Image (cartoon, rainbow, N blue to C red; front, top):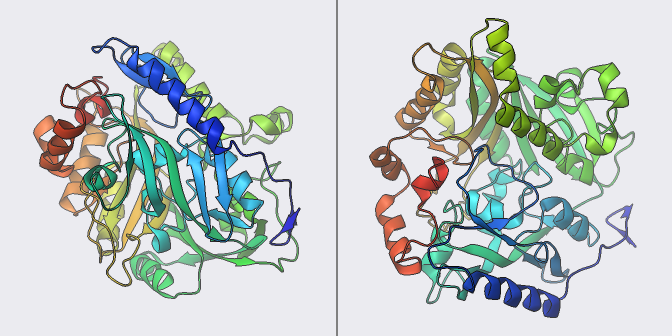
Length: 463
């Protein structure tokens, strides 16, 4: 089959009957658990950076990992909740379509991105993944499966699902909007002077001619914006799934071309730049590291093993080096406050490189933006997601000092912090940032007996 200039085979879909059977079996097993049992949906992979969660009954979700159907005319897809974006993209690209926002790591699931937020370089146009959801079937704590939409009886659950991290229920089926694609993406890498960065981001997002916008800060005085557009006439095409590393090309090239699929996964091959810490960017190691294992989920497993065994920590102790504080965060900063954030970040934290990704709520152009109560954002505001993932020497006597500094800085600048990583707020401060009254109202309606963990307990590792 040839669509949008590239040839591919359409992966098989699940079908509605098979999906309904899988849901019925999951519900049966859920209802069979003791009422006081801790429950988690079992997934093969995770992109969260909270290790050592409390023990819980894990429900097998292996029958809920596919695409039910794609409607090319309506540009929609019916998708099971545990479907990875890697699989979802394979299915939709075969129809010349893609999800409006494709988070950068292959094993992020659609349900995970909707309940836990996600972002990518289309977010300045399309917002966050939950904003392209038309309806969902949600398994709530009672064992009932509710169909929730932007209006109707359960509109409050639909709006409150984003940033609830599966503490209000589990998405089993989602209907999402899709967007048309071309076969390739043309990238322009522009070095931007420090004092002009915020205005350059705003201008690029307002220009109306780019399909993708993101950037990289390599150092205090070296930062680039990548402005990209679809094209069916690419000329020579680069490949960063082999020996070459994508993020280095941002410095080295002014214009580049990738297949649309390689563009969507350009960051996954080397986990942005974090594979360097595991040796995967060393040319000799890279030659013997199988290509199929150069991907984010493999690297995360290595990090998880290191956290469990404390191998790196033990080595630092033997070498009499200071212990490291992991600083793995994504934060959203109003674009006009970005220079202040980066200045303080360079001074107080010092991790390089840093990823930049602008975002606005979907519908900002015509005032139709939906309010998402658990992650409140100003509908008229352009934000910049700043992503940084590394370790810094611990502050003696204050092992969470750098992370707390970031949380304080984000609050000072009117920003938001994603909850996929570690959280160091105390409880009153947490609920101040994440709309405690709205969450408690939802929790009381959809989980009055507290069978699912509380959001604060979950993201702080206490549940």
